[in-house]
Amino acid sequence: MRKRLTFIIISITLVALMLCGWTAYAATSPNTSTSTSVLGTFKSIASDAVTVNTNTGDQTIPLAKSVWVYRNDQKGPTG
Image 1: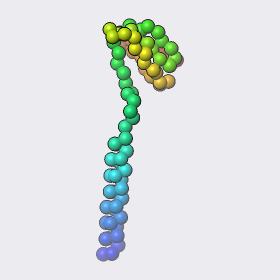
Image 2 (image 1 turned 120 degrees about the vertical axis):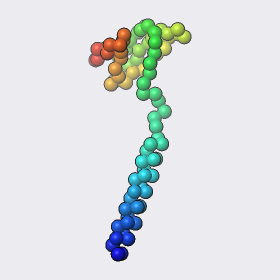
Image 3 (image 1 turned 180 degrees about the vertical axis):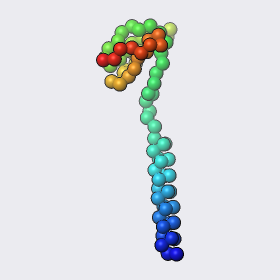
């Protein structure tokens, strides 16, 4: 009986710790956007940014190394 009670207490403790860890992890989110959609005309393209001329003016969007850029619903060349 004592082994069973110890096992139950340890199990409940582990489940509570996992739940607290999961909720703490889920509560942290990045402050930056991971996806951007812009409608306009390409003005300039660099290895780390794209400048697009929109109705509200030019917008420069920084690019990650692993970004995919689409033009007219077609994936642009990489590299």
